[in-house]
Length: 492
Ligand SMILES: Nc1ncnc2c1ncn2[C@@H]1O[C@H](COP(=O)(O)OP(=O)(O)OP(=O)(O)O)[C@@H](O)[C@H]1O
Ligand SMILES: [Mg+2]
Image (tube, rainbow, N blue to C red; front, side, top):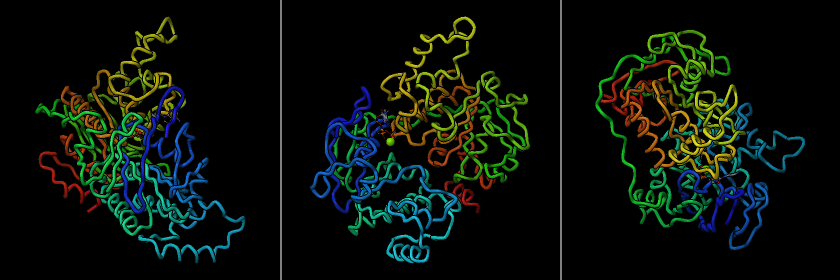
């Protein structure tokens, strides 16, 4: 396969063989071309050159529907279900041959028959909105199987899942491959999952195949080396033992509602000091997202107060710039950038009206803006063909890097970060964690909300657990016990 986007070569003569009944991992740095490869096979993109052979027969797949008809399906990291509808309705909705009038009695009977043979059970009558993330991802997979897929592409399917949910879903699929029912090609940045479930592996690097083999022969270290093209891998962030300084950010009895109008943040009081990382652990959906939105000025608090340096604080752009507060919300493509604007314009968003970046009153100094953008693109290794590329065409991990570059550059006194390494490859993860640690070492106060306990145990000085909108547990990292934190996350 060879695929270009304008002047950017996204796939350069890439070949991959997926054997029947295998679990195959596709690895590579952010922007290596992984998603593009599977999208070309699925018919979302048309490759310039190359062909897809199915059981040895060349097929020209023009649309995803055509791919489905041939038995190829795809599961994404984000959900494609309709939350208001039931599991059964979602399954039926996916069918290309859905009749105008649905005979529910016979369709329900057929669905029950279908689910009987499935390796996992789900309540067909449950509304999708009532399901946890792991259950939803199972419905996504079930949907593909219901459509008769025997080849399943999964593009970072576990990023929204907790490690135990991910293990459950992946081992189900693994068992199905062993039984010869399906073949799986999975894109993931998690070496743990690769080593636990995949037998075969292909590594892409800068649009080309960097290597392939079996996980029996290739360990995480070798795979990582293939991904970045060198054997020198980034080490963990270095923590200097500076005692925490004065109070920087204080939340006092903060409350907020979620989009449905229910109490999501319930009486949260927390203090973050200079030189301290306070890690907020919790299973997603326990109010962390709403808390971050309140701190970022994207959601109104219904009660409580915020203080920075002991002064009352309202999260507006002016006050954030004045107090040097940076914010990395979740889902940066939705919450932290303008997809239809260029990479350069997104990077300059905090600076465009500041001295040095304006000419006269109100004109942007394009030259200064562009050299600032170029510098950040280089330093944060944002994979883009030019600063003028639209943000929405960046690969998932590169959108994240763009938002990080904008927020982490310059002086930071307070940083609020939510899952900052979500979707990043291992090298980018290591470098972002090192940046966070460095900001802390230099005296920044950091509130780090993360679903990744490894991340919190590596970075945080203090760990709190959020459950049902409340802070239910607090401990120093040095005294923290993984299983105790885990059980508080589960509400015990
Ligand atoms: N629709 C598009 N228009 C222009 N460029 C694109 C488009 N889709 C992808 N690209 C570019 O192609 C390259 C490969 O992107 P791709 O999404 O395949 O990366 P990836 O390996 O999946 O990365 P990640 O791990 O970050 O998801 C990137 O440089 C990206 O910016
Ligand atoms: Mg991708």
